[in-house]
Length: 80
Image (tube, rainbow, N blue to C red):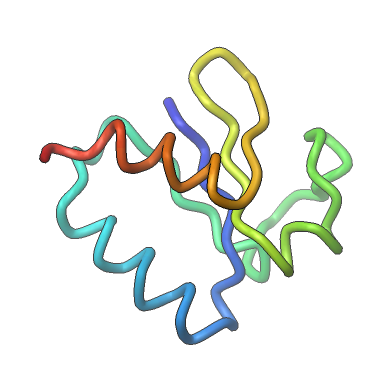
């Protein structure tokens, strides 16, 4: 499963992520608003300060992708 960490308090980010969630296959992505996480990001390779600024994705191979590279992972795994 691909884990997507995004800033849900960013209106632009939320709008785009909501669109992706509507068109994505549910079993492919795990969408995580970093503002609502019940666990500390210390258990990942992601820094909270970075996650507030740019999109972070951990792919199915546990590799971290940031910014545009994170979007590419999402785009490559959408239905179209």
